[in-house]
Length: 91
Image (cartoon, helix red, strand yellow):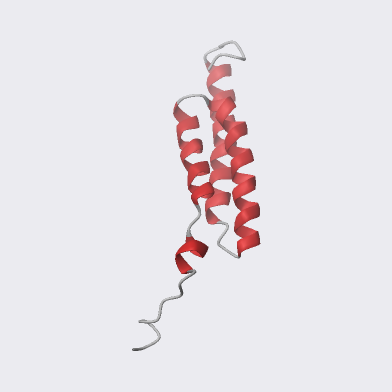
């Protein structure tokens, strides 16, 4: 048995990031459906995912990606609403 055969039992738990994945999914849905509402929700979930990733010593990539999607949701929402002159609260 070499070092590659010995697996860390906590590796799966340390490397999993369900909150980060949820934030990314919310960001992707927000691009298509309800931009501004999901922009705020995605930013909140992404910041919490970042806090947990930093606390657990995991990669912050999912949190960064989700936060970028939250910003993109907001930009797309604003651009589309000004471009098509929709009311500000329209979804």
